[in-house]
Length: 71
Image: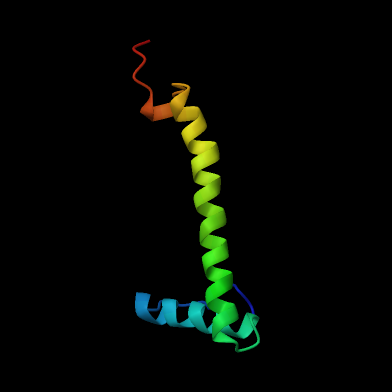
């Protein structure tokens, strides 16, 4: 089963149902494995945000439209 969305307009509910079905299929139908995989992926993304975004913010780095520099 492909992780790519199907073409054509779909409701948000249908999109989420399809994504859930794909995640379950990727884990061989094992719901516990699916939940564990999704928790692990979420924790990884949270870690990435904490270590990469916060580090720049804490140093006062400002880029692009969020910059308060008047120049």
